Length: 352
Image (cartoon, rainbow, N blue to C red; front, side, top):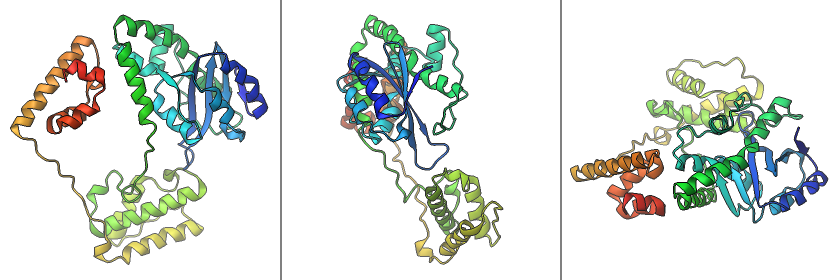
């Protein structure tokens, strides 16, 4: 069983171990399905064949742990989500990373999930039973601990395998560029546009007062979920919001038996606000207009796509790894902007 680190004193015992090694495998678990405010619940660490779990919910400072990671190469599988979570709680960012998912894709591995790689290279089949578990639970059940540890236990060995293969394929520079970009994109915080967030799937079919009802109901739901730190769907799911907006717009009641007391009152208050709005206050349906490409642009896109697909086939890579569709479109209509989206290795293989 791995060590569960829940105090500053316990963490201090592990800091010399981290200091003694240049490569540290990391992963994280968060609680996003069981609360409104996503919380970092667990940090898994493997170093020198030893596994331990850091408990961010225990309340001790994580700064010494983050300082111990300074100057180290951090091993991840799909670093984006983990780095964003860690930055949110004070991690300044890594010195460098080795992302085994990026490495696998650049080596032409089609099934690049961590479970698929562990099965392929070590013949071990991992359980997926804890993927949607509540990681804020304490104590963690043994099966969840085992699931968590497996996310870092094999990363050092995968690093050795893919390091050799990337160098054999002369793609080490490609890998370094890709890892650097993966780190860079996590420096930007993704902000939710609250003025547009109410436009859930299916909202495009609503017009006028029905859209105003949906917007106010969405705001009510969001505030209710925030106040009790529960997922929004625990209050009402999207289908129920759409149903309520349509029913009320048609002069019919929308009843949900689990809504009671103050929550029910606030539900009706949000409906009253929407019904009292002037038509000028109703949401405006905005249809995204895409400029139709000219014949020359269509021909250029087809030419670029063919070149990309042929190059990918020759290299044994997923074509989107060389250039996704959006980048190809930018290369056609805004050539300079499109080229800026490409890493040097991508420019080289495409001839830019």
